[in-house]
Length: 393
Ligand SMILES: *Cc1c(COP(=O)(O)O)cnc(C)c1O
Image 1 (tube, rainbow, N blue to C red):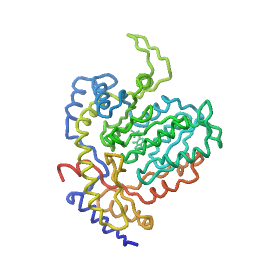
Image 2 (tube, rainbow, N blue to C red):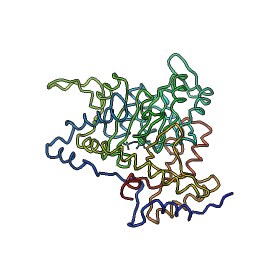
Image 3 (tube, rainbow, N blue to C red):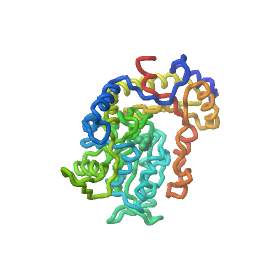
Image 4 (cartoon, protein in one colour):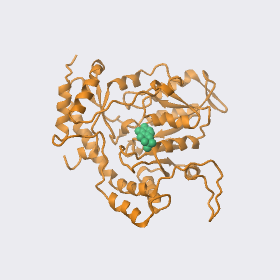
């Protein structure tokens, strides 16, 4: 057994991070492009809210960058997920497969549809949903009927699965697509963390019928708050726009709404910020990948801990960098968290697993969630702002 010493971890962190000047956040936004100019333009012209040119421009820029044909900008990533699930036909009483290792928004969006999250395990190579384990599990508990895939234990329909590209690292999508086809389950990628991440050369968010992004303040790019729905299906793209803008039937003056829609439209002022951020995105990714490289080198010789590296089939944005302690040293995680935060380097554990949260305790789940549990015990996120790998360090 190697000797693990928290002091070695601190030394490695210090070798990468700037020493001078106080607190280093986990993930800071970078506004060194045209952000001021574009936001000022909104204020100067009065176009701050539901009408204005920046929303269209932001959607077009996102489509160009991700390769998705249709993009609809919305108020946040959670709203994007909510509508994405409606678009693929999730109905009250359905079940939706969700990794237990994710941010709470993924499971909440399922609940907003009146459906039940059904928690599944992750794999070590991606930190995301394990498609092989899912296939074996479904062979056991699921029955494919004419109306879809049914859970033999609960009698409920399993309508969709939401893989999450954790910390920007793509899930193994090809085998997951196979599982979905075999069992008649819709695939909705939660790509909130993976803008700028590629699976086998193609941008994440292009595998299922619909996928979602987030532009919250801590994400790779931010619009203050914001999100987007991505699809390559024209009908779905149109319906996504319609549903997120109160489902109003276009007319010169009358107010006719043909569905219960949502007021989920991204305001123009937020989209303005987004346009400027997207111009910067290639640089941000470059810097973030450089930071990850520096971490990888710095931790190569540190015993008892490993810097998480992208899976072989992926090019990741390294949204949040992660350390994994060897299993036998998991007990030291909190010591490390305390020491790094005391020294002004912000670090965090991963989210509490979904099936352990009070409101989700009685949801259906795999009996064996051992990989997610292991990752949860051993993982620490370390400072990941693009600047730290960029020009100023
Ligand atoms: C950030 C995030 C969301 C939700 O995005 P918001 O814009 O904060 O609503 C959803 N899923 C995952 C995995 C996220 O990290």
